[in-house]
Length: 121
Image 1 (cartoon, rainbow, N blue to C red):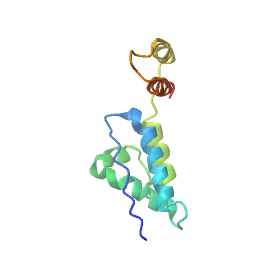
Image 2 (tube, helix red, strand yellow; image 1 turned 30 degrees about the horizontal axis):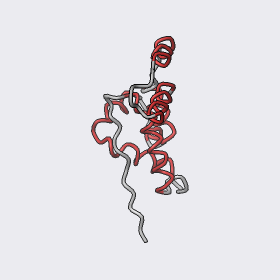
Image 3 (spheres, one colour; image 1 turned 120 degrees about the vertical axis):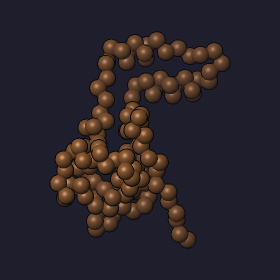
């Protein structure tokens, strides 16, 4: 029985807050697809990671000024993107948003707790 696994959807560069979720989905994909246990795992993961972005990612990768060997190294690519999309947060503002969040009328407790959890990440 063959297992057909689709690549995770592309990262939306206009929504940098979604970067952490995007990279987590890609890591799960690599695990399922067996990219962790291959001989050339870092090169395969790098190519697989960059493929869905197509031309959109070329300018970003060029801005990293990577060597040829670094472009083929998934760990280096991932670290560069992490640094690129690392969002500096205003702690005081984030606390105010969290502390002012109240459960809406008719909102299930599960939805409220999920919204509180999303405010903490």
